[in-house]
Image (cartoon, rainbow, N blue to C red):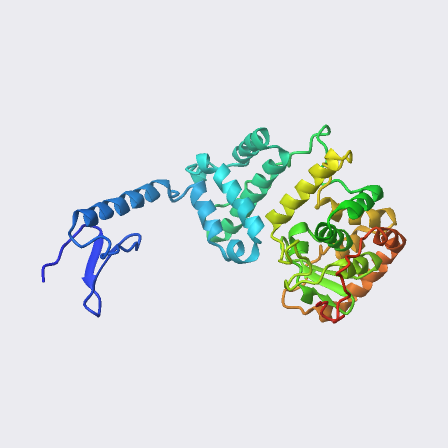
Length: 372
């Protein structure tokens, strides 16, 4: 049998005698049925794979550079296992923003240099993104120090940018009248989602993904995806009205869209924006309202009733218990939060009246699981 040799590729018969071929450095395989061995098409495919491999090598971070540190950080267990998908995406955005300076040698990195990156980010993308760049670099350096890749966290001394006083505050709390107006006008599948966000203080993504099994013995238990913090929210008048008004559906989540399927965030965001535009056309100015603002609304309401920051943080899930701890083992948190939320029960009862029960809605048949 005549064997063909191609530099950089391994060509061999497998245990069944069938010829195989792959690129040694990248492991990319060539389909020899599509590109017959020795043919012009085969050689062309080899050249394509070589070109792609060379291009990848050209953009790989060089050893001893900022880019190498950023790559190392993305390969840590912390990045892959501890961070939520949204946090990973945010950090990748930071990495991409810094790609033009990725070849910066580690030995020239200083706090003033990081402050310069921080200033550029502020000019291009505003203070919030600039501060996120600083946080990202601080995490990169923190995990690189124990490995001896860098000797200092040069981002730690950089001062955060402050929000410009002229800039409107994002995710402002909703007023009572705004909540009632939206509850009365919104389609049931949208008002239900907003009601869960308001009653629990969950971030929009967490609220949309809330499983029916999270409702146990009159308490909604959940983890914040962003931080892995536990939340335990007793079901009060508002949440009970919202849950009772949800149309029966077969989705595993508490909330469902108009087709009875679990929401995806992009779908909810699109529906919410369409509703706001329709309301604005009818003379109701609500374009400034955001679902995230409902989390701020709950926190503001509790603060106005005299609750301290620790009590509010517990309600909002800003505490870090071990992931393995079962819900029932932290029953004290639910009891404490029930006392905290009791301070706004009158307000919740007023809001509950604005929730429109659906003709098809029924109460959950299993109070323990919340399943319909």
